[in-house]
Image (cartoon, rainbow, N blue to C red; front, side):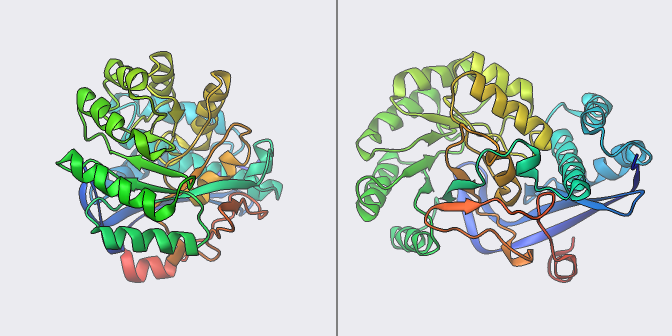
Length: 363
């Protein structure tokens, strides 16, 4: 039996090369990366991480260091579900989601990586091994980009190998959104997969009105049209919009997804492995989607997520997120004709350059 010997948590502020914006979070100049490295009694190590945008990362890192590390050291590293349950109830009063599940996610991802390293098996195979080649789309964070920049970004995405793109909507005047989506559709051509993300900007009535105005443009889905807390309102949007409605990056527990599915308030679940509770919960949400005959997409941390979707027969496109860590990775994800391949390296296979992170982005 290998026990957890050491847990190291670090916080980095990673600058973005370009200022990114969406309708509710505003300008994003950097993101906070929280990493967890777990070493077992045999000397093997697993890596996990999560992130926040602009603010809040210190709280996540502190929660891991002060509230979780002491209970992790000495635990059987292979009993991931038992450790997950222990973390969940240890932090239950602290939130049941948000910072708590982000903290749990980073630890859980590190534990699964450690298990894959010990087994000398990539996680997508450890999870069941459906198909390592996963369709992927480029997620733009581009609400304030001028049209010329929006089109140039699309051209760069296509040159990089993407064959599906998501753009931001939710500008103050709906006519601007319609004009921008129309221009993007014309630029990409008929049949090119195009999705939009409102980042919760609209009211329920506003979302239905926007969805109807955007109906001529053959959208793959509309993401987060209104706040996720309003299950009844989102169910109205699903019924009356005529679109596939994606959501889930702001649903932070298995129970959030269960309630959303029961309420028919989304049609395309979109969990984020870095805030839902790690691989342990992501896979449970994937099973929930499959049991309800729903396709599955994802949000964020694509270099980690690819393993979970490579084990899911009902996956659709995986998001390649705007907060990529490619500049700090030994072997970043490569897109080939609209697809990525889950690595065959043990665990999740992500290797971060911590020296570079510390030099250029340490908080």
